[in-house]
Image 1: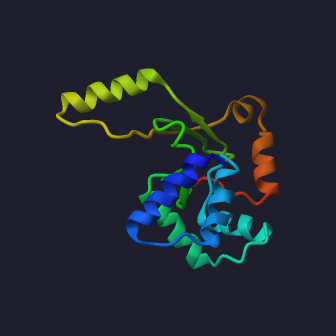
Image 2: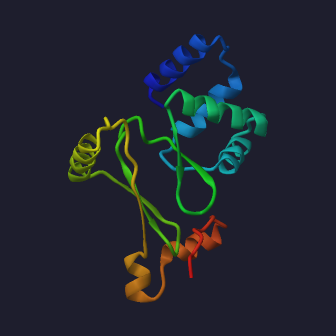
Image 3: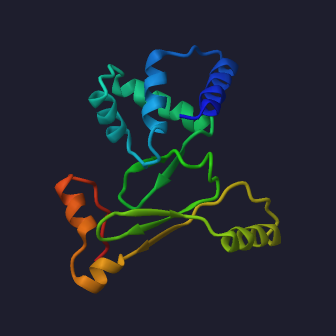
Length: 166
């Protein structure tokens, strides 16, 4: 984990008059050792598997604190659950492509989109602060082959799948 992340959180906590706890440290470590998106329940399970004794309430409070500190962002991936993304520190203007069949998430950046969003917001009298684009699409494997190894793996692992609109 980047020491800058810990410093940013420590500074933020100090400014709020809170104290740093070992449970917050464990949560921070679990979140930033991976670049995967996660739900609070997935984070709680990862903490349990790592031997942490942090409670669900501590997980939720810490997630709120990390969002407020702008270290993670809440995103909606189309499955009706709040998902958190730890990748905005290094890539603040990234977007998400989500397979509507298997739930696979691909992050992407595009300078053309950034420029277009900047022009659009300024033309309408706004100053862009951040952007996020979510594109829902069917993956090539399922369309071309009739089966998707990601869908099979997602179901085997019990992964949450997107809500399909029929």
